[in-house]
Each structure stands twice: as C-alpha cells, then as structure tokens.
Image (cartoon, rainbow, N blue to C red; front, side, top):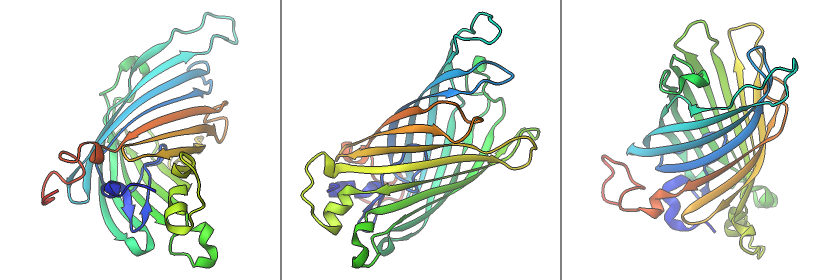
Length: 294
C-alpha cells in the first residue's frame, strides 16, 4: 500500500503514478531526484567509442496550483576507449557539467474516476551554461511537450488482473535556436504494473514486503530528427523496477540502445527520488502561491 500522505505527489483517483526515470511523469508537483547513468557512446568521425557516466540532480517546485517549475543539472564523465584502430595513444578522460535545463508543467485536465491526466509544458536546455571542453551546445534548445497518464483501474472486474497496468507518455518537439541544427520529435512512454495497486485495489494476495512495494516497468525513449537528411531515430528501451516507500523511491533500469547510432552496449541507470512533500510537509507538497492552508 502507498501511504495516503503521498497523495500530493502523483495520484489520480486510486492510482499512484510513480516518477519514472527516462520519461517525465505528467504531474506538476514538488520533486527532488538524484540519478546515475552509464552507457557507451558509439565511435564516430569525431572520436572513438566513449564510456559516459552522467550524474543528474533535478528539483521541481509547484509555484501555482497545478503549475510547477523545475531545474536540472548533469555532471558528465567521458572515458574514451583505450583501444584505438590506428594504434595512437588514447584520448584523456574529460569531466564537466552539461547545459542547465529548466522546465515548466501545467496539469490541464484530470479524470480521477478514469485515472487519467493530461498536462502541457516543456523545457529549455540553456546553451552556454555547461563546460566547453565537453563540447556542449552554445545555443538554447526549446522543447514544448505534452504529458499524459492513464491507469487501467476502470476495466471490468472480469479483467481485474489487468487493472494494475498504467501507461504514461510524453511527446515533445525540440527546436534549437541555431537554425543549422535539426528539429527533432522527442517521444517516449512507460508501461507499469503496480503491485501496490494490485494489493490495495484488486486483490490482497498476501505478498510480503518488499515484493508488495514494487512496480515493474519498461520505458521507451526515442528522438527522431525531422528536417535534416542523413539522420535517423535514436533511443533506448529500459526495463526495470521501482521500489516505493513513504519517503523515497529507488529505481533501477537497463539502458538498451535500439540501434548502432544510439550505442553498442547495454548500460544501466539508478535513481533515488525523494518525496520531499512527506519529508518536509511544512515546506513542500503545496503551491508556493494561492495554495491555501496546508
């Protein structure tokens, strides 16, 4: 069972939508997460295959009812392959920050009875705010985005074991301020099966802790250039699992590239999501303005 004080975080009716790792959830609520991801970048004309480690922190605050603003930053370590095709010395490793990203989100339409939510928003990657040695972009990219979530709790009882399934998804259109770079369709979705929902709202199977606190899921995240020839869709498939408690969520996923343009090896990501609305209820879990009494 997900404890009831977490209702400020991501509920539609009886459905708790967990914050997912690779695709953004549709809720405009207070969030704090820390994640670490590692994967291989494929070799290109600009350099050899490179092992990348990303450490990301994101903070989101609800400013007005159902409207939130967020900021995130990523520290990157790049470790070029020690094996070079021409026998030359390997390139040195590099470290630094990626460009800062800011986001906004507004919960446009909700149907608790049907466990459905639709939100609008987007993000901007602020060019020039990262470390130049990493080759980060000097221009800003704007990505207006549509977010949605749907639980299957309104299915008939004959299909009761399908009720714990839920689907969240995002569709965004990235527009770089540098006209020579391609626009891109950024899209993804997460398919989840909530064991807490199964136990609490379908049938108590007597699952022990921590099994009853798990949400298995698989996420799909893709980017498709739209106006430049010679570029192809890249993305990853990310099967994993989330563990829920009252104050924290811990998640882990594999990072599986869909093609050689994305990468050649399977990576991994782990994330800790702090439910700051429950940890610090006097400060978080309610809008900064026009939220009334907590």
